[in-house]
Length: 257
Image (tube, rainbow, N blue to C red; front, side, top):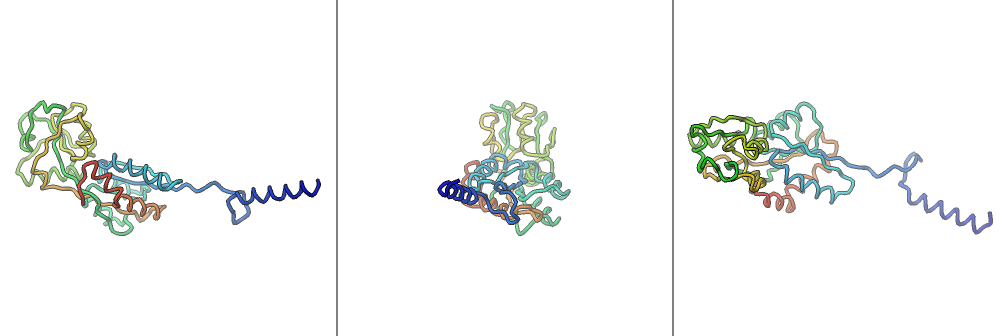
């Protein structure tokens, strides 16, 4: 090998070494680290948080966001039983308080949105429902959330405020399940959040009722004490509570906290 060739080899090796990621023990270079962020969120946040998750991944290359959407009470139960997660977003303060009492939170929750109930019926409102009281009329098949679920607790609050007692044919574990009963024609009416009704479009007819103001649900979000990625958890919370997150939530029909 002449001197020119030897010099070229040395330069090539040096360039290759410079491109490799440094390794403290001299082992082979490792691929870039992939961060995983797991978010437990109320079912009514499915659409908005899915959008925000995509935005978060785009802003933080190498980070994958995984969601578990369900009724807030079910999520607290899963977390208390040891399910791994980094962030919890509840559809009410009561279930967030349960998570705090169980020692599941890292720091104080932050309120980021609010929501109210509305009546939904199959398209065209075939039973002619116009008020909350109509839901208690004989023969009306109404579906609500179970009492331990935020949307169910809100429905119970409206019942108490109005003196109208409902006799539901079904109590569901998540607001999305109530909506599914209506879109599939299995009931005459249901109580869901205004955001869920808006998201369903022409699959339902929505009937607002003034008594819903007696049971407004506030949504808090918090990092979890057992988070494997607390820095990313905090960044996601900042996205939700910041201008971009608030714009997405407002566009979906959520009100401010």
